[in-house]
Structures are given as structure tokens and as C-alpha cells.
Length: 89
Image (cartoon, rainbow, N blue to C red; front, side, top):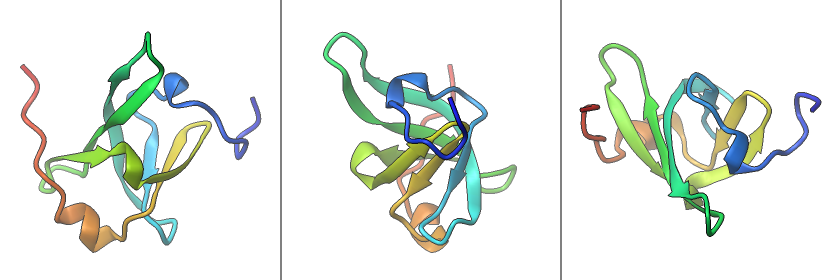
């Protein structure tokens, strides 16, 4: 795979960068949520830094997934306003 080419949500891994609508890094992927058997992508839990916490990003707010990077339709401020994701158990 070449960086920049679109890829499936199925290959997204924890640690991938998450960027906002302007291309600014806003966090990293912690978890990918979906149904592998039905190929249904529900969303992501991202870490937005030590003070930012964990946020849930619905699948419809992703615009593009490339190798190592998830692009969002949201601005940085909109990412901050997302629902807090529960702490890992």
C-alpha cells in the first residue's frame, strides 16, 4: 500500500494519526468499532492527548482513510465537543 491511497476501515490500527478537516493532527486511533462479519464501520475511539481525553467519532464523520491516517470532516473545536468515550476496562 502507498501512503495517501484510500484504504478500508478494516485495516485501521491503534496508533494511526487522526487529522481534522484542515489537516491538523487531533489525536490517535485507540479503537475501531464495527461489525467485521457484516463489514459495517461504526466509528472510532480516539485519544486526543493527556488533557483532551478519549472521544468517540461516528463513522459518518470520517472523510477519508489512508495508510496510517484517518481524515475527519470535523474541525478541531468540533472534535473537542464530541462525546467522551468510556475509559478502557
